[in-house]
Image 1: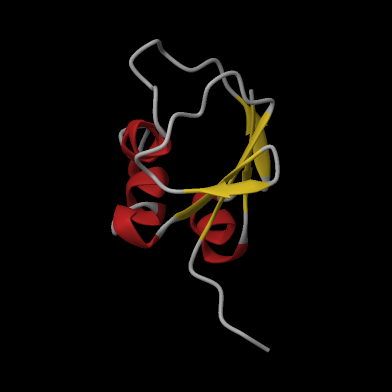
Image 2 (image 1 turned 90 degrees about the horizontal axis):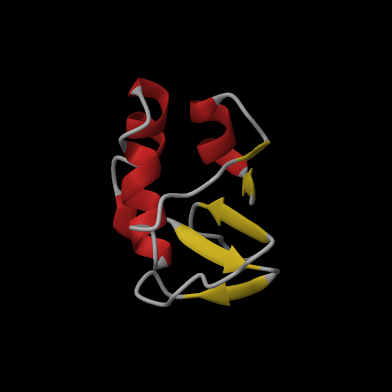
Length: 83
């Protein structure tokens, strides 16, 4: 699965995207955020406030309690401001 990182999430992790095989325990967007936070120091820093992370599955925004299903792409980014 392609995971894309944006804004300060990307800066903290040091990657714009990566392909990952997710464990079966990752069912929801929130599961993904928590799983990623356990992948190392940079990830823990990027996801230190998981409730602020926004998620898009195949370019559709979802809440963290929603399933990610068989998504091809998941984007993770901080809250957006208008402009």
